[in-house]
Amino acid sequence: MNMTLSLDTPLLSLSEYASRTGISIDSVRKQMEKGHLPFIQHEVRGTRYINMVQLTQRCAEANADKRWN
Image 1 (cartoon, rainbow, N blue to C red):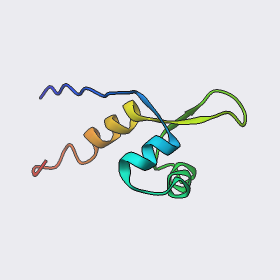
Image 2: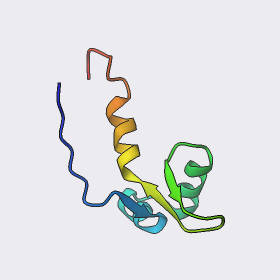
Image 3: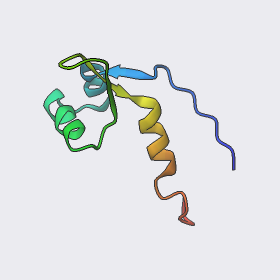
């Protein structure tokens, strides 16, 4: 099966991701620390961005082998 996905942006700031998902920025940070949200950070103490491409890929692969998906 082939799938084509189109993302409006490959990276989102923490505040934009929080706004789009309806969760707090603190919750976003906690999810990143736990490894639940992939992010990109270019330098030590630099700005972090949620990697929407990797997140979308993770979601597409989750339970892909299950019949009900």
